[in-house]
Image (cartoon, rainbow, N blue to C red; front, side, top):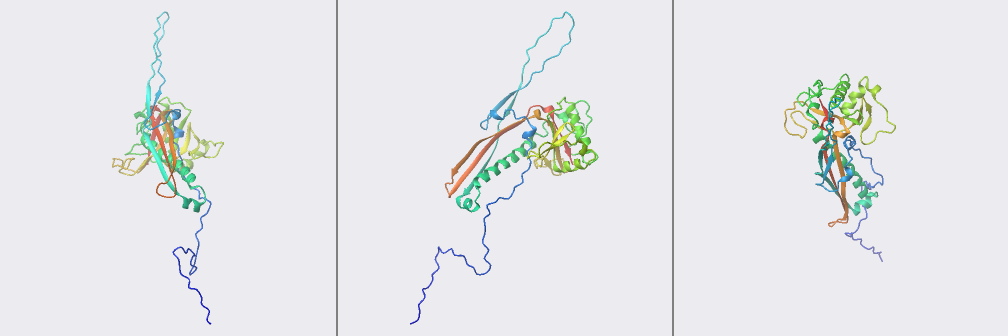
Length: 321
């Protein structure tokens, strides 16, 4: 009698892989690739003394300013005049906000092995710093005193050409130190203290600076390695930073991308004193909730911040081609 073999019927739940042809399985690695981030510099170049005073978007931080005492001539026997110093105030409005929101599927997190929720939150924090940094520089770099900008900068001499949108300075190894010194002199003419000064360059400017004859002699090494705030050392009286987040404009456009009289591609080189700008930022909410539409979690965070000019005389910028 002939042997009868049972017929195998494919099931909808049959997940046995087919080995016909070249079968290459997909492997999920438990290791993560390194990610590069732009250096965040704005908070390091501004006054953040009031950062702990904010809680929610819409709060106002009222900053008292130091009053100016009048100096008078003296003659023997005269009656002295006394004044009551009056302190002014500056309002730092916490009216800016940015948020992030991500979802993580249980299946994806199981396959990836690392904690995706933690990884996404860490990445969101770095991306938040970059977005805030770019927005702050874009809106404040040209808000210093009018005498601190242009082809005739200098409150006393009007002698320094640090560029305009229509005639930016073309940097070379021969003139970049002259431009940096001009920024320092602009601040000197405004009686800006020599301590706590900053200078923020683009990578392009740094390359020119490092190829100049005097750059290597004037740079001072740090005790620690370069951090993610872009700090690279000292030159003249400036702490020098490098950042990709400084404002730049294409020919025929302004720094926001709108049409303008600017005829050349240009970017900024910003210098000043830490007291020139005030900045306060706080992540007020981070929430982790179940995803109502899928297996997994949702995480979202809100960052509120404010930025403003508190000493206009302490901020300047060169417009560079």
